[in-house]
Length: 214
Image (tube, rainbow, N blue to C red; front, side, top):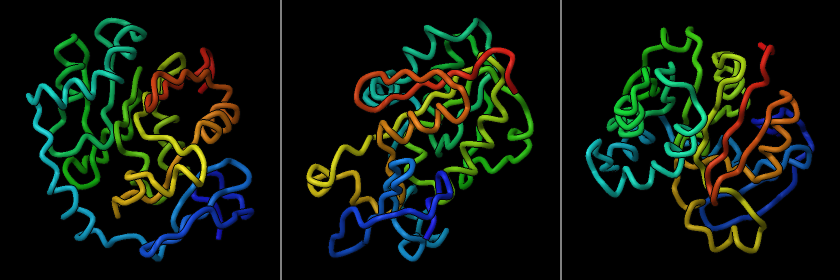
């Protein structure tokens, strides 16, 4: 078994419940479930179809503003961006467009337009997405390649603390959640790419690509 973020083979048991086993990578700190627990594509999409996140829902917009507000304070005017994993109701993209930015959409189930993954962007967002990724290392590397120097990758995901709190954590109970980042995971990832990292609140990570680096 190898870590799906860093590829290291040094993994250890982290937690078990009656449904799944959770492993932890000794190298980067990612907690993840083995592939035998992954849902099939149809089952996974059926879970997402249960979500009712409407573009104009004020509560959903307040939730997304935890990432949108700090990102908007940092990116240039009329910037080009990508909302990765936008879902069926791309409210964050709508909010960013209302602020004057250009936003492309990608979602493997709802907006599977691979062409947008061939472009470069000044910012990329992924809200409540990375915990669903079966191959987070490959996906994040792809997004980083799409990001221009000086650009921002904005992530929203709940962070693992320790096994004791993990046992009580509702976030692990979603069957589509298969990998769980800790703050140390993001620090490791940022160091590998000479990226600056800001943690904002409990669940927002902003990673900035160094100027002059591809």
